[in-house]
Length: 139
Image (cartoon, rainbow, N blue to C red; front, side, top):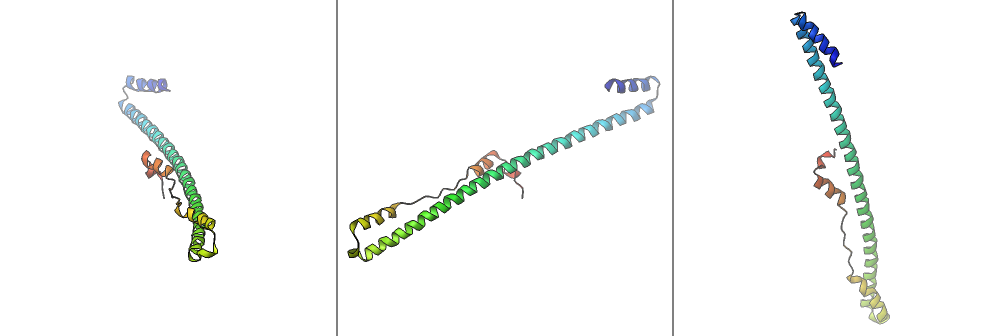
């Protein structure tokens, strides 16, 4: 292909057809510019596709983290409901100490001092922020 264009160029120059050579040169420049623009467009498309894939991966990870948070929250809520029931039983024992045994008091007293800490799973969010690619996520 290059030899073909080189032969055309040399033929036009040897025949002193400068105006045709300039038209040919402009056409070659236009072809090169069009090729560069096409390659830039393809590159932009590929980069955008990679970013969308990364965005989907980030959103899936965030979704999994949120599901973990909901699971953890529901377990803590269930545990706290049991704890509330034990506190009610403990208060009942304190109000009527003669109707219960010491072992009942001990059984309901121990759980009063146990607290569960809620620590949300932020791994995906921390990864996204530390990677500096948080702007990938679109509305």
